[in-house]
Length: 37
Image (tube, rainbow, N blue to C red):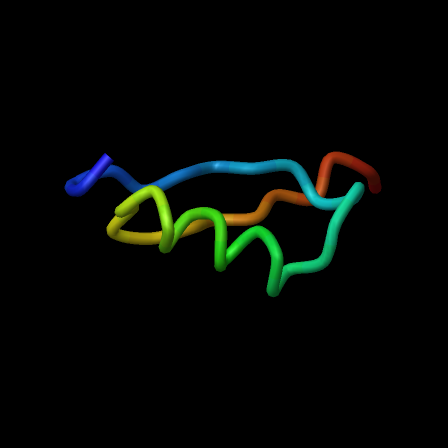
């Protein structure tokens, strides 16, 4: 994942948790999408 930017849905856990998991997996970035209007 070192050159990957992750796309994840909003919800289930905090933004901080999402960022920490992405960082731990070696992602280059993280985009959080809102799947509700």
